[in-house]
Image (cartoon, rainbow, N blue to C red; front, side, top):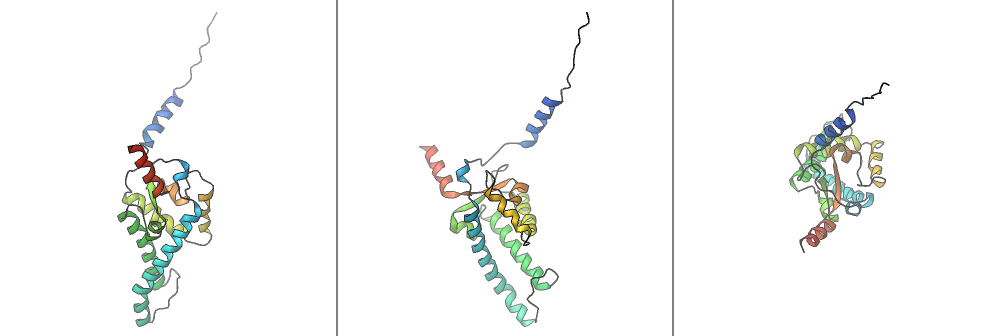
Length: 181
């Protein structure tokens, strides 16, 4: 009698070990109700757009009138490129330097957190607020924000690329105070 021995390659366990080592530690993991929904993020974004238009009007309005620039928002024009730089700089700088908050997020008590870092790094902020906001600002691509409604961690497409989400600060503070008692 010959005994058949089937050898299974050790691919499964090795792949699981590789996946675990790539993932790294998880920071800022909250229950589902801590994540900010679509509408509160939308209204914070509208406040941010008001702030950006005010800054753009102040910084570009006078030079545009003096130099007779066409105030076109096309990317081909000087005014359009300058307005885009202000738009992206607003989100990048405020998010990084203000612990994940822009003015709109401050008003509504929400902030950006990263799942893989304790504090937001420049790399994370540049991907989320720079590259992804640039892509998602187009009219068709704005639909990428609607994904927030259907995901458990309330992430839009830019959040997926940067491993981030937006949480409600009051709930996070209440949880931290509760755990200290």
